[in-house]
Amino acid sequence: MTTADFRLEHDFLGEREIPNQAYYGIQTLRALENFAITGIPLSSEPLFVRALAYVKKAAALANHELGVLPEGIAKAIAAACDRVAAGEFNDQFPTDMIQGGAGTSVNMNANEVIANVALEIMGHQKGEYQFCHPNNHVNCSQSTNDAYPTAFRIALSHKLVSYSEGLGELAEAFAAKGDEFRDVLKMGRTQLQDAVPMSMGDEFRAFATNLREELARIADSRLLISEINMGATAIGTGVNAPHGYAELVTRHLSTIAELDLVLAGDLFEATYDTGAYVQLSGVLKRTAVKLSKICNDLRLLSSGPRCGINEINLPALQPGSSIMPGKVNPVIPEVVNQTAFYVIGADLTVTMAAEAGQLQLNVMEPVISFALFTSISYMTNACRTLREKCVVGITANRQHAADLVYGSVGIVTQLNPVLGYEASADIAKEALRTGKSVHDIAVTERGLLSQEKWDEIFTFENLIRPDFIR
Image 1 (cartoon, one colour):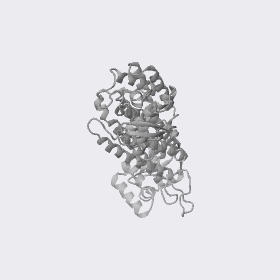
Image 2 (cartoon, rainbow, N blue to C red; image 1 turned 90 degrees about the vertical axis):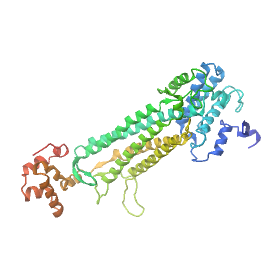
Image 3 (cartoon, helix red, strand yellow; image 1 turned 60 degrees about the vertical axis):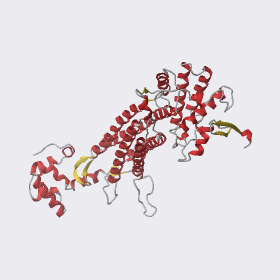
Image 4 (cartoon, rainbow, N blue to C red; image 1 turned 180 degrees about the vertical axis):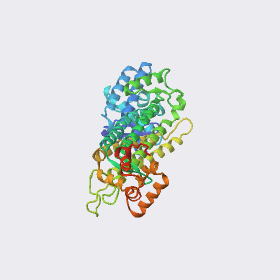
């Protein structure tokens, strides 16, 4: 590149050459040099970039209405924000997701890109900041400490929509399997030991119920993150923001982002508080734990095929071994297990980062944003993958499952009301010792109850929805 391929920008630390084609400026360049941590740029989260543009547009509109920003500059900034929000300049957001400075580099990346796009709209060259300045105009009445967390919360709220949809669809897939398997008799198990009979439909419907509960928790979390601190500026005093700005910018932002945003009642508290993130992270962890447990069950129930439980079949997606011919592994539940482990670990990251706040600000919000964005993305993908690649294709080994029930000692529990606990326990002990069935010992050998009574007790309906029979 020649000198003509660069423009010269300066800050209070000095001057740097910026590639002419770049819409970002000197502060973004410094961030690129300082924070080579994850290699994952801000552009990897387009909803965050869009939310930053929403914040800057709302601020420009509010500042113009309050007489702080000239009409021409405000209009150019708003138009630039629309283009950024549409994704036209996503490649101009290269700052690393994890950074020092409480998100200042992210905020300045947005300020610089929007300023330079606005300059071109106004007929000027990039870097001619005397006409539209990243700090004086785009960042007018703002601090990183209110702009960054507000954009973060907006992006989280929008990202949670697709996650909720994916989780809901997975729950419905389990519910559909519950209906399909409603007439499949199987043995329930506690502590990996035979317990009492149940319907496989009930087992899968319980999976659905277990996940549906989380949809309400996600909705609760979205309410918490709808509270924003725009207008707090640096620490909550509202320094450098005109009177009435906080309420006005919040109204504009609610309209632009299509969210019911609420201005925090205590801007000092809202500027340092990370409780909503801890709550959301806990919800993600809770769902991850549930999802992983369900996947453990799917792996167990499909184990075998000859020497395991083998009550269900998972779709065969790929060869399972480089040495064992014909082996097929439960790869989808396994990958969801691993995703859950990651999310559980990310929750600890959020917890530690939230605890690390000091005085009027928590500077660790970048790692909180990285952890939450990543966890939501991974969980969304995991729900979709589990539904599409596994759950919808599960089949039941009906006869084998029923044979396990009638060959089990567990069905002796059904005899408690008729024979009493001690007599039933003795039948179980004898069945385990001899390998004989509960039926043969109780009815044929000992005559403790008639065949008619046995048939009354051991109907399918009475096994899955037991009546109290004496």
